[in-house]
Structures are given as structure tokens and as C-alpha cells.
Image (cartoon, rainbow over all chains, first blue to last red; front, side):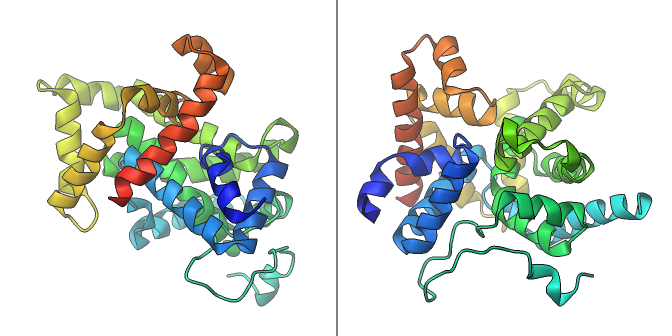
Length: 80
Length: 206
């Protein structure tokens, strides 16, 4: 299956929505490395889903990443 | 801090020369990623955050509609992931779906919580518009025009597509459960969820 056929197959949508098995997920990721066009399409689908949810890339904020990392580190400190 | 050797167990798929596109996710064997989390690897955290956080944060925002609350819940979600990683069973589903379920449950627990119920008591206006306006005021790189654009495009999606995406992705139903709830043939649900996400992509590209 070439990149165009793969993109229109609908499997990328299923990937974004968490509907695939582990093996199917890996195959999609391998395709992304093989075909940058597929990776680009997947990126657009994921961004569309995030915007639809109202998150609009807000998870990318450095301060949020730091806060989450600190919360995780605290578990390690509490349970060495 | 982690050592340079932290990356050694990764089985990152061999990538072609750099291109205009970045891979959507760093391809790491789930088993190895789980081991990295268990071994307190900062690199494991980074991979997990970069690969999955967009979807997890999206679910939180869909439920709670407030960035300040979603920020707090995201920390709680990651704490739960780290604390419960030993309970993750690959035979029952992927790491992604396991984390999606933790996130949904965290959001639902919040909506049932006393603090949220208390918050509702003070809301006299249309809840949806109030929350949406609040998000607008808290949006990253506060750009009201852009935010309204995002909001209006979400409203443009035909409800018959929006409902299947909402039920399957945000509420975690299977195709079969969605078909039962919506009284639709299974094939129709599968088609609509794929088509709906494709339509969202087209809407946000405009």
C-alpha cells in the first residue's frame, strides 16, 4: 500500500482515537518513519482532535511540563 | 538526573534523513517505555509526555473546560500512571488506551467532586458559554480571535460525526457500545468516526 492509499484507509484516525491494538499502533509508527507524508497527516489529525477538545496546544507550556515532572519526581522521593 | 546510557535500551526505528515532517510520536517499544517509567527515567517521562500528553490534555479539557483545572488534573493523571504502572497489562490493551482510561476517570472523579459541585452552585448563566468564555480568557498566547475561530469550527462539525467522536474518544466507548447507544449499525459508527476526524482536520486547516 502506498502512502496515499494508507492515508485514506482510515487507520490514522483509528490510531489517534486509541482504537488500535499494540501491534497495529507499531505498524502505524513504522509507516510514519517510512513516509514523512503519513507522519504529517497523522500530526494534522492529532492537532485537529486537540483543537476540537479545546486544548489548543496548551499542554506544551513549559511551566505545565515542569509541574507535571515535579509531581512525578515527588513520588520517587516519597517512595525511594 | 539520568545518565547518557539512558537511551541505550530504546529501539527507536531507524529514521530516514531529516525532512519537513517530524514523526508524530517517538516510536518506542511499549515494553521498553514501561520499563523506563518503572526505572524512574527522566527520558521515559519526556517520551511519555511528548507522545501522549496532547490526547490526555484534550480529554481533560473536553470534560472540565478550564485550563487551571486541567493543569492540576494532568499532574494527578501522571502521578497515577507512575504509581500504577505495575498494574498495566499489555494483554488487556495498549499503553495509550490504558492512559486514556486513567485520564477519563480522573476527569469524571473531578466532575463528581465537592469542589466542582460547589463551583456549579455559583453558576447562574449558561454553563457552557461561561466556561467557554473562561477558557478564552485563559488561552495560551491569549488570542481571542484565534480562540473563537477554534470554537466556531468545532461547532461546524455535523452533530452526527461529533457524537461518535465524543462517545468513543472522550467517553471511552468501543465501536460496539457506541453503535448500541446511538442505535446505529456498527459499520456506520466506524465510518463516521473516521470521516468525522477527517472533517475536523479539514476544518482546522482552513
